[in-house]
Length: 154
Image (cartoon, rainbow, N blue to C red):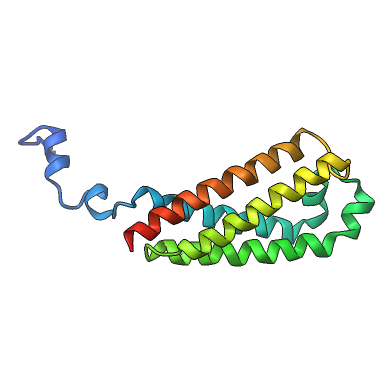
């Protein structure tokens, strides 16, 4: 029975190893990482709206009858989000994609304004709908920030 006895400390062996995970993983600058996150989240939201449009609209505080009537609109938004998310992901992978992020930020700002308007008129209601409107506004701001970071790199 043989025992492995390292000649150096464990930390030194790890730092000196060229097979470590850290030495093989490329570093993503902040804007590129944020762009990847935005793209992935947008695709996930789009798929959710495509698969469950009624439930997705009900989250905004709309009744089931209204949600059923606007299923086609939910699916249109889903296609938009999937396309914008896929474009942002592809662009972020190359360190580009500022245009996709800006288009997504515009869509998010419009969504925030439309949801806020629906809240004011009572067509949407509830704390969740308010949170979604604020989240869309925050997503728009972060998207503009990430786009400017990617544009500076290219």
